[in-house]
Image (cartoon, rainbow, N blue to C red; front, side, top):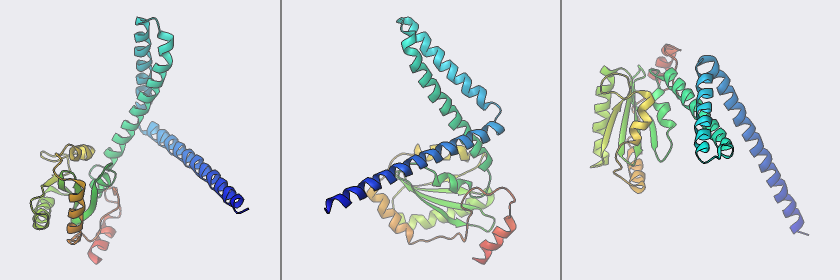
Length: 246
């Protein structure tokens, strides 16, 4: 008798899990569709690019099928490849649009770092100014990466101070410094993640854990930073007042 309620409860839990999965899938599709509509309004070339890439993939695969007289067998494969290519174009153009809007806004570099995939330990705003210049610390397989954003004449000294402070704790671990921007010697926001992933691997996961524990003791010298890209001039004065109070 005791087994029946357990089975019933298990079945109910499975059904609930399936409902939640379907709802989550529905929400994702809705979000993608909303993103598509928004991108289509802002990017007039989106549809031509997607249709062009789809048709090109279908034609190329179909023509390859002609070589072996299997064009009709290859056609579904061409359609599938075309759909994937069109989705890829959509994703890349959305990503480019997002980075274009965020570029130059306070908090944009920290937002880009927070969205990195893989084993990266990101601590935003370990140093900063009341003008919302900031240095973010990243621990990864390359070692320590200090990423600065803000006015070049202010972030250089801020970055140097943080690098010196960090070096006292991490010993011989490599420390890289990056300034986000579009001037010479800087890394554009859209290429920041790619730049970090191209750095050489110098330490393992255990060393990353040790470094994270040591650096946690340093704390932060930045009072407050926006959680994501903040539109230029949007409530800048009130944000700066908040920073000074804290």
